[in-house]
Length: 395
Image (cartoon, rainbow, N blue to C red; front, side, top):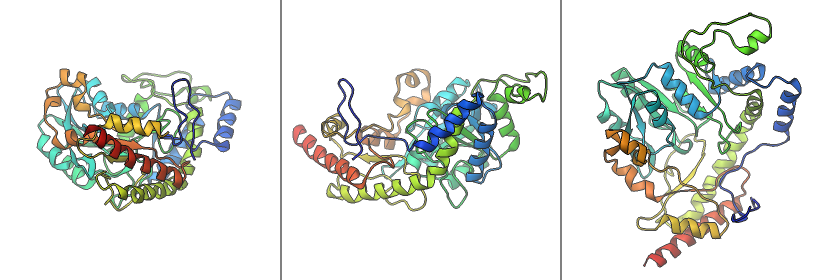
């Protein structure tokens, strides 16, 4: 079984929520970078960008320091700012709303489709369109594709950009193309818990080469030449043609990313098998909802999200699972109910009935490719027991 030794006050987990696939090959790749003594973005990063783009079927890609940096650069490259609106899913990590607000624009929160489909609702997106709408963010929840055909059509009709938050969905295929390449800009995350990881890191792709060029420039203070190019003797100086940021990755993270990219197919197969184990085991408690269970097609299976029965206290369930040695998390508290957004934006005070129904009941179970089938069954059985016990305690 997957196990982790507990520190002071922490249990020794029998099944951890997440784990990486990092092994000897990654250690060797990083060691090679360290021996080179060139640690900031250089030739390894450029190779990683090209390999990731090729895996997606994209022309090129830009590696960045985080998934949030990817989203921020997308907003900046589109020229979004004060007076503009960006429609974002509330049932997502806070990053898409945060980068919108930091640009001076207004995040407008959209509802999810249903308890069975936690991606953003195209119908609600259409209702939220105004003359100020500059972009729509589609987040592929847990690695399951959002409704891109509808969202892309809405964006085109309105003259808005479609930004894909593909943080959960690296190299996921659809009939329309790999996730991240269907909209105008695709943003990826390689955070430590993601299916492929560089510790911290991200990647951006764009349909318009000019937009991707702006993103590459903005990633490094809008400098006309990179440190890598200047060090190799290509040019002596540089100009600054705009306002940019330091969102560069390191050669260390890029070396990790190149190896991790090669591990994705095997990781995908294992995750799919584990999800099947979970769904079979959880059939013993039909009151537990299984979002996306009826979906066909490719998925990254980044999260094993379940819905607890109405009225069953999530904190009690998590406490029972913790006592059983099963680590859990919540993806996600709805962004529109965070105190800052309630204070700062009228749009946060709008009712989102599906999001508000499912958010208190969402629970993420362990899912990673180092797990065994027995780990998944243990976690599922512990959840069924926890639901029964929590219901009895409440009664």
